[in-house]
Image 1 (cartoon, rainbow, N blue to C red):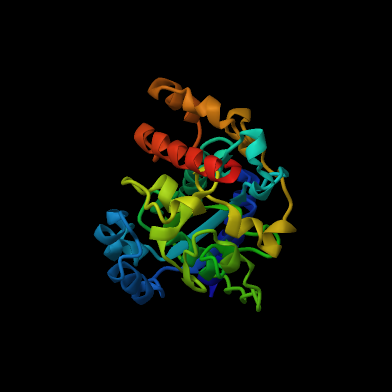
Image 2 (image 1 turned 120 degrees about the vertical axis):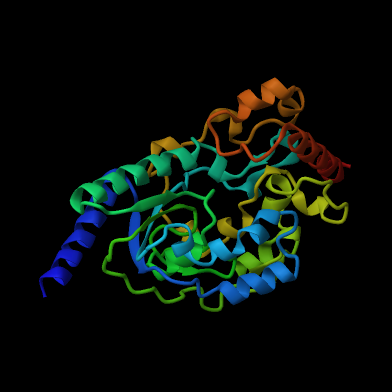
Length: 322
């Protein structure tokens, strides 16, 4: 009877420590096979992952965190809000000459910020429980963060496939700490999307096959960041003035609209990435581009992709002003 009380105390202490690190939300799920394994398989078999071949190569590992950390018993999921109190992308006007960089890339690289906090949390856990093994994951590790976040009670998966939290909306960076320690699991939260379909209707390229199923090959976020080839001409008008990512399906979400903003100064927008001028970006050579994106999470966009995106947006400027 003593051990469960120790587990409960450890879990509560771990959550307090995570909040002290600056995370906004934390939850715990019992490790096991992902419940969305069959859904992921169908999605991949349909080719909706586009050029993200790594999704296929890592599908087995991605579907079970015990393959990432042998002996894993608990999945700890944390989140930090990156919402900023700035006008949304619908306020862009070709008359200003400004283009859009997704909000997640306005501030400092969240990979590094969350990873450092998670590593400190892992060391804290190992000090509290001698011999504890853990692994910190932020985006780059093959794990279904959103599913585990939902199972850990951080929120629910919205119709736009993103995690939604009643207090913080969907503009959340997620991190995962895997551990071989038994922690007290949280209860999943109910879905609060109701009959709302704002995100599905607002998508400029009709990328949602149905609620909770996104065809990445049509998604502006994918096309401007992950896609390496030319962008299909039929999709280019939908890219609008987006040169890196897209926020539309989040901006129209009522839960995100009412969420608090500017909670973390490290994610405050750098002036050069907040509504930059297209003509200024077109002047950048490769060295200038690397300087422009330095310190941000935009490393996946090569200079060649950047130039391609600028060209598409320039075409769209012509459509809007012609």
